[in-house]
Image (cartoon, rainbow, N blue to C red):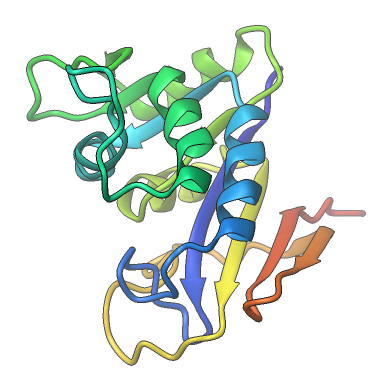
Length: 189
């Protein structure tokens, strides 16, 4: 069974709005590119899918936009070519190498996890909360930015039950950001 990894940038005060943290630098982009390449497919809710598509889909002309720095291109290429699954009750179709996920969320994601491969990657805010409540997330990965946002959506706000985590890995960046990877703690009787 392939694991489901939830990965997101978050500020020190728990804000996970994409504009609340530090702008990506070369080191964090290299890190996220490697993480993206550890996944067979990406799982997004509608909002995250549309945001990522607008930023990272290769333009029809085939060349990346001028605003994109050379060190951002490997990430753009990795996310552009990745298989994507989109959970949405409002979209009637998707493109960008994507497929809609319909029906019971738990059953649909369980089926995706049972397919062969090295892992699924989920980002965003609303969908990961639902998946955490269902106990379907196998790894949590947070890139904590040295910023206090003071407002915005917060990480897993509204989680129904506490999830105890065990640290798997930790990496520090020159910017002061810290990437930490956790797994749900195994309960011993």
